Length: 459
Image 1 (cartoon, rainbow, N blue to C red):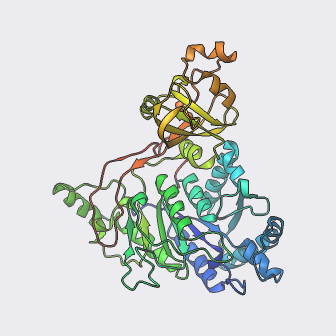
Image 2 (spheres, one colour):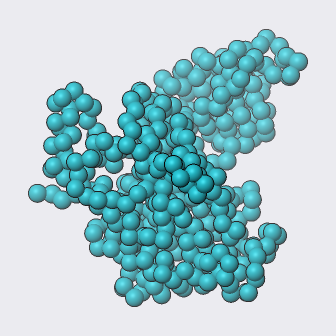
Image 3 (tube, helix red, strand yellow):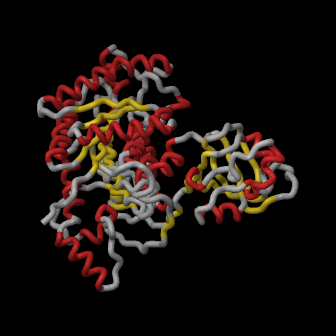
């Protein structure tokens, strides 16, 4: 009988999980436990990636600097000092268990360039196939505000999506999300499963540490990115890394014959079956015997956006906005490309093959209103696109038929402002959040992209 398949696991550690907030000393007990946990997962057949912050924190300790400086050049210098010492520390700990590791440093520019994105994806896959644990961090030595991910929570979500990981663990200093601040509200209830982040009501007042840049709100943003790509995302306590192994075992137990029989019985009785056990709700796993620690699990989208579509949505920084009418939006959802006739207005300055936002407007105007807009009502962003024409050219051809493009701008390399394969729409889901031990009805979901669209292979 085949055992449960191996999983791709990404573990994200913040600076506060790596160095002491006051003394900046490495937290060796936590780091050692993380190393043991990662090696245990490897021995169980899983593929593991660690996304590690902490370079600046380690640099502060090395240079005996008390507080994180504000000037970018000093932060970059400390990152350069701390990164090599941080990797030396990881390598020393993993060497004791004879586990090879590799360092991968990324900036958003690396992700925005399609060739470099694919190179990073292929390199990580090759390392995993070799039995190596990649340790990913943002290249703070080179990154400036315009090309930063913002925090390593976002970087970990993009990394997990890039390699089609099954699980993303966001380690923090609390067990899980709560509906209220548990420090000031004794009646605060844990939120164990989240089915729709858009409907989530949770306490996110916890800010990041004085050394880090994240907080609970950035973890929810990261969970939104990862789950949209089909990655189950977990928030759990960093001081007990062994929880990761228990949670992974719990998810694997959901693939056991007993759990499959439970799901089959539910289906026979008129219930809905779950295709992927990673997406199973707490209710469908209540009969499992695996005991798991308290954590919050964000369920993946049933219609994941992956590969090129995910890269267009989240890997690129938009340089402008295209406002389209409802007819054009309907055509896009029907898998058609974006024609000039459906474009109402253009905002920003951008070149060919640059990313832009796509926003749908309620009603077009025949002439600009007092606000200067060519539409009435609100504009709702529905996706992103790589355009075939520059902004100045689109302003000339918007609202016209494709047959008029050449006469208007002198050439017509394409009849589309953006081909359909260069357009990615945000998934539109309406699945309610599921607080602890409370079941709520599901609503239909709609998304774009699938696991077999694109060139990436799952872990």
